[in-house]
Image (cartoon, rainbow, N blue to C red; front, side, top):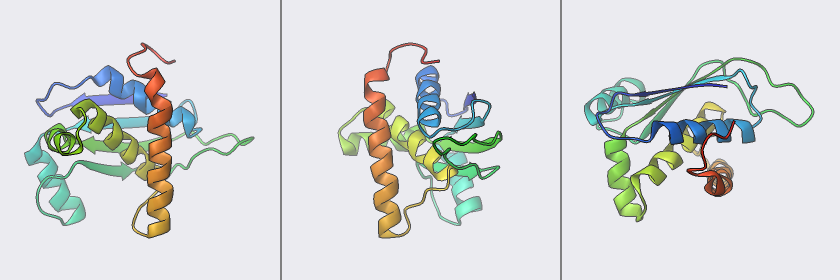
Length: 156
């Protein structure tokens, strides 16, 4: 799997751990081993510009997802297609504020947001109550499964 992490935010972020989490989530979602994902960390000003341009919403947000080839999670017994999953854009400064409000670390918040963004790239949404329940349930399960692997070195 090709996972490109570009930190343009000026914030100190454990890029290796973020890459390991992304690989873990993509493996759990049964994406093709040659699928490609880009994670970009940007500052608040850049995120605010993206938020206005792409979502017509003011101010910086925590995560944006830009799907490319509309890949979907693989199914048991099927070969998943090769392709570009897309880009997840994160804002560590917004994540830091949210982490304080939630009572956990900024790293935890960035991992939650990266997982959330990847699920959006895979076609999950939370506009409707049943979609919200499915997406956030899956997000919670993936993050719980990830916990024993955190900080454990290279996962593959």
